[in-house]
Length: 138
Image 1 (tube, rainbow, N blue to C red):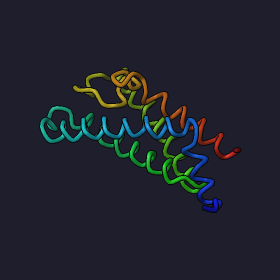
Image 2: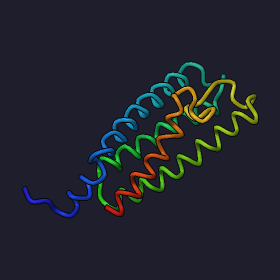
Image 3: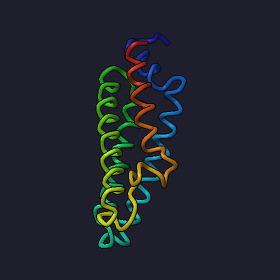
């Protein structure tokens, strides 16, 4: 099979450490979406902001996973923007939960910078941003 430029771009994003990123983002999709769906369905009135933010995190993780798998320069740029937005969200929500804990009667995926998820929510976008910038120069 002949490698087209588009196929080569796809291989760049999910090759090597990119495979680990796809796997980790996939795990975070499952964790964030399943958690938020359950919490929204059973106890939404308890902490609507926290559960909505967890659902948003799941959607962000899903989009990044899809763009990494898709590959190509357009997908790389979209993932880069989304990872930067994810990092801003993690830092903002993490800071908010420390400064005003009463606003979050229950934790979100991004609470305390992702402490409930072993800090993966703050480390993952940093790693992805590094990988995506490196993939551009490769």
